[in-house]
Length: 345
Image (cartoon, rainbow, N blue to C red; front, side):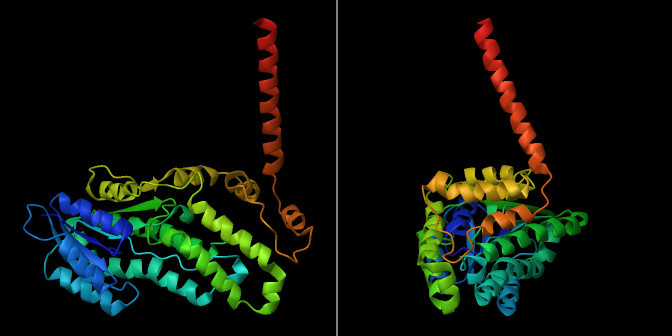
């Protein structure tokens, strides 16, 4: 019976994947942070049902003792792991860069990056034995940086880079490494249906020094909060979260898995936008709240009126001219085609 180890199984994508693998008759070690989740999994996935076997394990990926205790439990039950899914992740800090919390940033790094590495190292000998697979869960934010999410984005860029590096390290052992990049799926524990942004941003603003609050103002706070929460339910958000566990399953079981799985229309769209030069990406994000969410974003209350234009004009951006020429050529071609069509037809 193939064996798989999944972290972050308290809810969401991790729990979905446990269900998929259980139904297919596999042995699953489900790492959970909460004791309540352990009890719930044991009830939901009982043994002896003609399906798989689920072993729920208490796991705090930020506690090395907990990580290695979980690994010892697994090693007492199997001598190989066909796959590891590093799914545990949190988003607990949001807002402009100056508002970010160092303590919350450190916590996200511990869970999203360092914990992933600790778990991998604790069982990599079993994965080598099986010539298995490692699936790391990043995000669309791991390849495209969004404003007001700098600390979270940093952790997901780290997941991407770490995965690319260890993939090369583990290839000689017959082990492959895959990355899943989910887009925005609002009804998961990561976002808590918008509470993550509403509560976290409001709380951070209230904790800022009075001078910083005055510099940004309540109007900007409202804009940031509405833009972040609005993005959860905008035209690019995703409803069917089963697509994520489906991608994870494919990475674990397919004879020809992909390097990367971009799951969701927004993840695919942002991947394409990532090829644009920085000045154009910045412009897109300046316009996005208005175009997609219908929001008039209030700038920081005491930012200089020419601040944006000063900052943008400072960069050396030779591609601007190339882009403008390309647009003019395209428009000219379209105009010529329209004229010829009228004349000939």
